[in-house]
Length: 181
Image 1 (cartoon, one colour):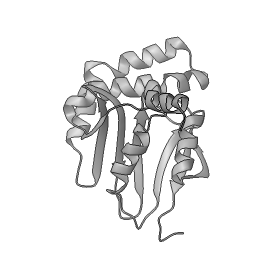
Image 2 (cartoon, helix red, strand yellow):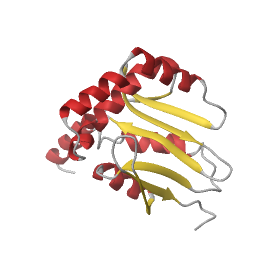
Image 3 (tube, helix red, strand yellow):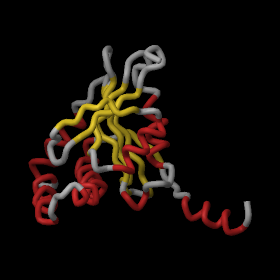
C-alpha cells in the first residue's frame, strides 16, 4: 500500500463501539432514522415540507414515548444494538428471531458514517442472535439503492414483493438459511 492509499484508508476508519439499545436511546434513534432516510425520502419524491412534517411527528413527545416503550418491551426474541461514536448514536439495527422466520426490523446508519464498516459490524454482531435454521427477511425502501446493494453483499436476495410502506414503497429481501440452500 502506498502512502496515498494508506492516508485514504485512515480517513475512512472511524472509532465506534457497539452497545445494546436502551429505552433512553429513543430520541436519538428516531433522529438517526430521520437523518439517515432524508435523502431516500427526497429521491422517492417526498417534498422537504413532507419530510419536516414527518420529523415533527416522529420527534414529538408522544412518539418518543412510544418508541421508548417499544424498546423496553423487547422479549428474548428481540435484539437491538447501536453504534456510537463518542456519545452519538450513528447506527441502529433491530431484529426479531422466530421459529419460522427472522426479521430485520430496522437497519440505519447516518449518511456521513456509511462506507466505514459500521453497518457490517452491526450486522456481524446481531446475526449470531438470529435462528440459523430459518430465512431472514427485511423491507427496504425501493429507492434506497445503497442499502439494497449492501444487503445483496450480505447475501440477501429480492423476493419480488413490493409493499406500499408507511412512507415509500418497500421491497422485500430474504437471506436464505443454510438449511434452505
